[in-house]
Amino acid sequence: MKMHRLLAEAASAIAKSVFREHRVLDHALAEAFEENPRWGKRDRSFIAETVFEVARWRRVLGFLADSEETTALCAAQWVRMGFELPEWWAYRGTSPAEMAAREGELAVQARAVRESIPDWLDALGESELGAAWDAELAALNQRAAVFLRVNTLKASGEEIIAWLAASNIEAAVVPGLPDALVLAPGKSLPKAMRLDGRVEIQDAGSQMIAPLLDPQPGERVIDACSGAGGKSLHLAALMGNDGRVFGMDVDAKKLVELERRAKRAGATCVKSKAITPATTTDFAAVADRLLIDAPCSGLGTLKRQPDLKWRLKPAQLERLRGIQTDLLDQYPAMLKPGGRLVYATCSILPSENRAAVDRLLEKGGFRLLDELPLSPAATGFDGFYAAALVKA
Image (cartoon, rainbow, N blue to C red):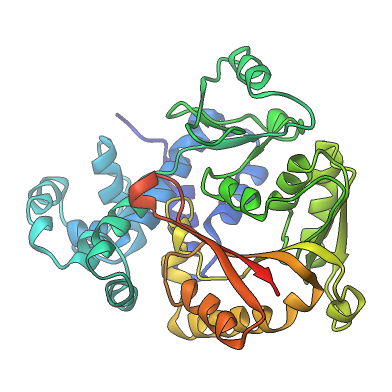
């Protein structure tokens, strides 16, 4: 297979910006696609696959190419993808034949190289998860499936499967998750369908968090770290749009996006609210249910954002643990006595999960009802953690 020079150069430039400028890969890709509307579906697919796999397998490709230069990493990835390296692609590294020979030497390299992860993060994973870390790390290096959540305020699962099939998009029900669908490998959702309001792109693991809150029609529910509102919309659907869901966040831009999404979804019970120093006082003992989907390392989501492992630093992780403690100290004031709290993260590290819950339990005033650690190795989903507690 032959490559188009402009596309190769674009892919390499994006990868370089991710590694050197610590840009978020998704954002860098979206910006490049917006700036180049002439790129067709195949062009965008080539660039996206190159950049995602270079981010996912950075250390493996560096070993194969015997170089850390982005041009060499891309060259190694293209060899893996079955492309012939053209003469115009200048890179400092081993030849394609040598790369192929070095593939056989990968098995004896250190796990951090084989699984392409920073040394400090590999050591941390092993220290926190022990023997389970090998399987979790391997699972997190698999490509992510595309999961949808059916917006039951607008359609049923059967109707959505038929709607997708009419556009030649095959989808299947996810066992045990009534509103989740998974697209066939290689299938994606066109923009018009993403913005239709009948479905939301949401990992199957993420879809298990809102039901743990067990929200009832007519209740007041606070999603205290709502972001752009994926779980707020799910809560609204579970409540049949009856009651009030307050989607709260410190980021005003995310709340604007939440409002847009709620309007599309027909989730009229969702109300956005910016978090201020007075929020916990203004909403004291207001909520029947409280979701704290805390800022975290995001290590459970490496399948779909492999660039995260290169951006994350030990000091940042320590700061996030501090934020998690602060949220569990302050936000439960918004929950009524007898109300249910769900603390959740998209991390697989016990130090961000059960350790945070244990600190809350030690202070008294809460009782643990249920715990849901979601393993990527066991489920094939993203990694999540959630604990449900009741306020005394």
